[in-house]
Image (tube, rainbow, N blue to C red; front, side, top):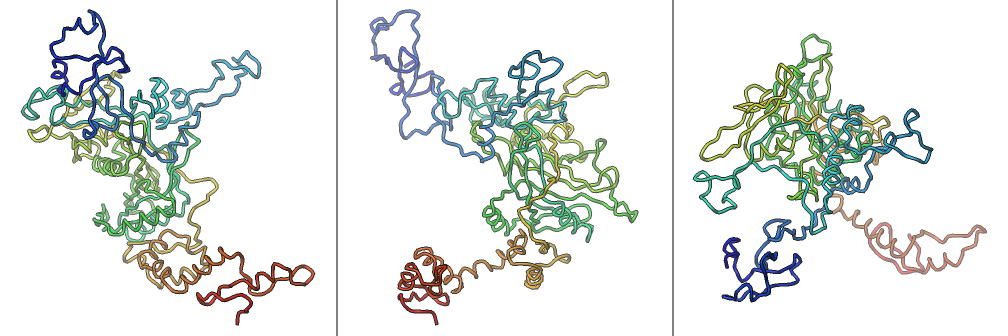
Length: 556
């Protein structure tokens, strides 16, 4: 009863055994001396308790009182994650002519494969962040992590928690703000640059996609926003890397201005766009927007606003990126919560130091996502600084620290009171275009972009002009056209027409009865073969209606 009271469970549910597997259960009648149970001083007892069918597990991977974990539910990862986990991931090296003293079939420390997280290899190849799967492989290999299906599995990935636990797990005091202890108080946050990234590279299928996106700014001077739709693929330039391949840019309803823009929310088109993308095998991989100002020289050049001495992403943009990443998490079976980080990317089109237009691609760190989720930070008036919110009786904010090198080159730690540099939240991502483009959408002419009033118009006239420039198959291969057809209900109307239903009937009957011929077939000698005679007597479907004709007749 004393054990039950300490564990705060019903004493009838306790199981006390002399082995860790619970096979040798000790019955403990009330008032029975310990010596009468066959136990002696120094014996080790193991305690567990029975969970009733109506009592839910505490979490997806609940831990029993003996320390063993219960089986976790199956987590369905993306195909890219399952594929990368099956790869060895090691970096092959050739035989070093200077240091390798063995034969061609031998191996030594100078030529043996490197691990995908090898710091020197990443530095030599100018890879700023290791890939997510290299980071995960390092955690699981070094800690000898059991597989997720094992009862001994301990999740190597954990999402940071920055909220006070209410009520306190210890149940020894009143909930915050009346009381707080180390069991319910979140740990202090020490900021440092994230050494891995969820996506290593952004690949736009064609340069024309970017030019088409910029067309609106060139015509109006107003800023523009779009969602990136594509797919995730392995990226061979980084060990166990992942790249986001962008196939289309959808531009939601918005109001642009010279110095910003405002999205029209809620977006009634979003469900239809997601449906079209899903049917095409595409997912939302990120967002892109412009921050461009013409420099007034009349040469098409722009002002360079973002650089090392100003900022790359403002604090407000970092918070927006974190919110978007929280809405698009990455599913992972190696995380206790079933998700970890996000592959959602942020692309900004802005001026470079030469006055040209360039793309900057970023993600924000998992710490940034947690700080936004738990309402720890807010935007600052100074775009290069992030403001830490104040602690109040209604809202607990943990201590936030960051490390930096002072003017003497010594690493020091400082408290973020009340701000810290935005760079601690950024993760840089590379971008580019394929050497041999093979785009998903191949229409030779761009259909007008949606939601561009005064610049481009989507209507039946535009559809007619678009379709007459090539074959129907080629001209329909355009994401914006498919979105327009879905919006005006053309696809639904086509499916409901009697002619389409007739076509479906003919296809079904043809598949069921074999190839249908309009007349008797002949062999190479010119005579009708036995197969043609049998086909002539078989029932046949009229190609003009849904009537099924008896065999032996001909089509009028």
